[in-house]
Length: 167
Image (cartoon, rainbow, N blue to C red; front, side):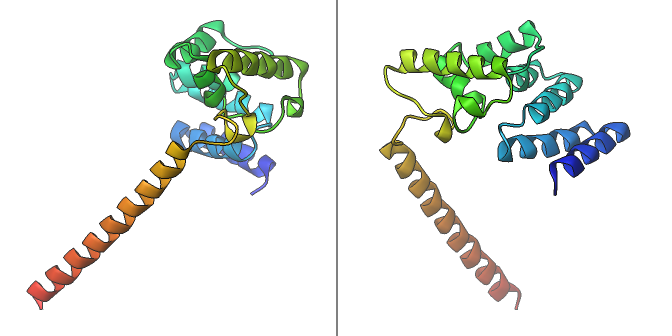
């Protein structure tokens, strides 16, 4: 679906009063196109309509016009930790990809504060995680996959057992 069609559907959802669907569509759009500041700003508006000041602050963080109380709520939800703020912005790629000078400067500032707090270089391309990744992240992912396979096997065994009891 094109960006324009998605945004049109969001407007239709809002006319119907379906904030949840509008928010879902916009969240997906921002995840796939993190550089689209207009989609971020629209998502902030929907979050604001939904009464979610933290998320409104997250998605309006790079905007020219932003509500300082919402931005503060987002930063507070991140515990004031610049690394968590960096991750929370869900930006991807270089700061130069920002379409406005303000967004570019905010991204540079957030990254500088996060790197200072972390004491090491961080990269936007991995949503703010350390450059090079972490063995812990890989181990966690492998553990989750293993747990999912075990769960699937147990469900299969349970289904066969129930089937045998019935028939």
